[in-house]
Length: 191
Image 1: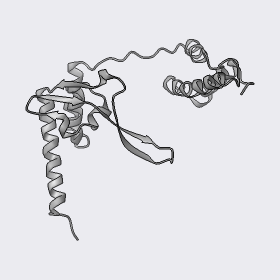
Image 2 (image 1 turned 90 degrees about the vertical axis):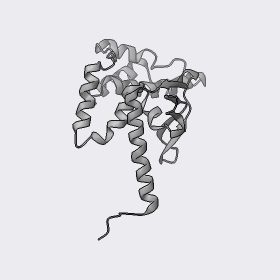
Image 3 (image 1 turned 45 degrees about the vertical axis):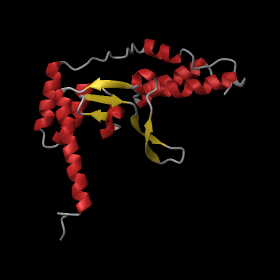
Image 4 (image 1 turned 180 degrees about the horizontal axis):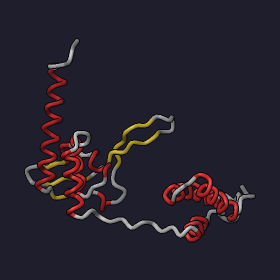
């Protein structure tokens, strides 16, 4: 570990870009993994300096990488997207969740983690107080877990737009029908 220098890290990063075709986001992930490992080695006294310090900044500069600015969809873009999903025989079953995502601005984990107890149809509000994540465990198995928001700002109440309300009611009706259908063991296809 003590033999690894800044130039080695930079050379490694460049080889990933040139030989493997890694893109900026992939390189950020690699650096996010390596940097804390070397930081710990510095703190534990195995090495004096972290060879990853500044390496990613140097790579970005030499490759003229800038993070693309994120922008919200315009109303026209949202409308076109929703219309496409609605008319698509392949994707139209996703219409309620896309409507809720666009109408609330919530993250995917916040929306898929919602329970019906988090939705107050009477007062027209949605309580965001947890996330649903799918993560690999130490034993290699992947499992769903409920996590709380990282900051107190993440816990919030969102007003429910009429389109969101309609989409949630549509989904609730579908889920109630499915639950009723399974509980009654009726209309199964049999040969």
